[in-house]
Image (cartoon, rainbow, N blue to C red):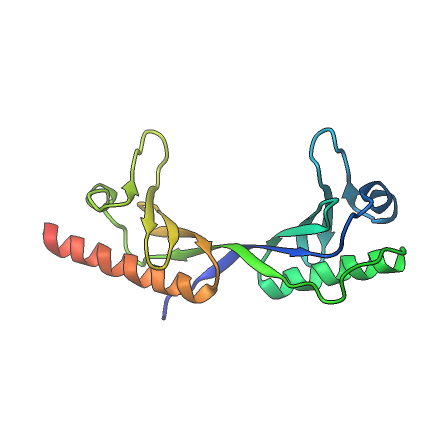
Length: 181
């Protein structure tokens, strides 16, 4: 696990209450926008941690842009504390679930994407997009592999799977190099 994995986005979801009055929340919550004709949820942007929270009338809340689950929880707690002070009745301790994580990494080599495209579960159309899309089965993630050696891993539920996926793609690239040379 020597390669550096950088988590660049964590998306979590939770439920903070029932029947949230979004018009009221928009009035009392700084940095929030509520335009129901454009989007059914209220958007609240925080700067520390730098995230966007989407709050829905049903009480469901999504937090995106966090660099860790912990940052997302901090952001959710900040907003909930503020909403409680404004008089809203909210769940005491909401269960926060990671829906998706996005990580970036380096292969440490420049893969031949044409060779990689011979693998199952890959898509590579350089005229459309410069990266190869590889849908890994285990862990169940999607990797975007670029000719520069940069890799973006999406669909993660935890950081450990990023290391596993990166090691697997590195080994696959090495095996293909040996096969073709």
